[in-house]
Image 1 (cartoon, one colour):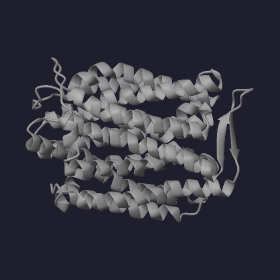
Image 2 (cartoon, rainbow, N blue to C red):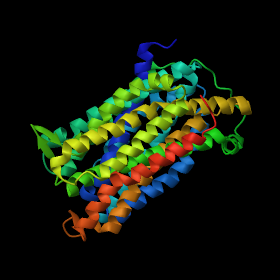
Image 3 (tube, rainbow, N blue to C red):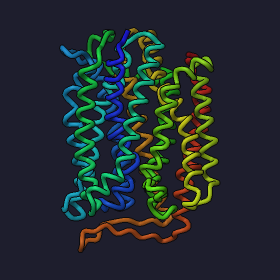
Image 4 (spheres, rainbow, N blue to C red):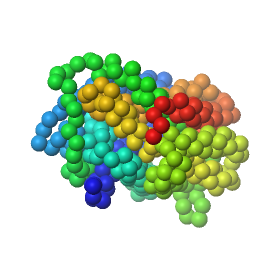
Length: 447
């Protein structure tokens, strides 16, 4: 039986990765790259697309390497223990804007974004795989997954809520604000990742293949539950990715900037914290909800339906700051669904790993969980690239002035850009929630 300390320790891993680094990369990076760093819309979209091609190779490779690691710290934990500090350092560098000119800044952004993706893979794939070796009890797996999601959402709440106040404390320019945010949160992410590696235990021994083989990669594509669940993971991250990537633009160009209500600064990060709190609460309630409806599959379908319906409803809210609390209420309702399905996804990956071990005779836990991490990065970054692309199509142009080095924004068609932003936050995510519902309905494992 795992202790409460170990469950909290496991939660710290996703508090660092999901609650800090990935949350900031998802919600702040498209806006950061175009409006602060000074990349063009085309550069921003291309950067995120190239990173995904990079991940297609690195994620499954890291999963396979992790499965074959043998050390005094175990199979997966050493990657957390020794990867923690580089993970935090690279994140800090990524949020810094150097004075290097157009070409130098482009090289900096591409180099550190790709390096950050590699570091995230090196830490997060083994972290996800830990769930498969900490316990063989299905109920305890659900509990670990629930703690993981609560940790991610609780830290996401703290991160996003603190964002505008740190900016206010640091003062202008915005480039300096993001450098300080990178240093502070990078250090915190490193400490949490290290603590996760030290506080968790590996109780089960993976059934290792005797030598490296490409067979596990081929086996994946004969594993129907894996195919369904990977597509579900991609859709779920497209769903979240669109909403987070466009939230900053929504406040800047649809709502006229941050809104102050009774002393509370509601900017795009604080706006999304209302959802983080809801996800944290319902992530904790997910195991009980799953037990009540009878299966992970049924619970996931209910959650996806909630996300689809509330996302469509958001589109019909007037584009006016006077309706901010109606917008918040709708985001909260959407987050009920997200909170319920998020822990289920990782618990279902553990089921797929067990299914693969039983069917093939050897463990491919790291490889299977790497597909979950790849789906996360694929969905979030591709959605970020698509947001940049669609904004460019609607008439949004960004870049760096060659003479002054300052960021320049041009809006060719204000109404078109506003409507596109509103749809990207509501209708586009609704489409992917509906696809999730269909894919889970077809998912063959009935647990």
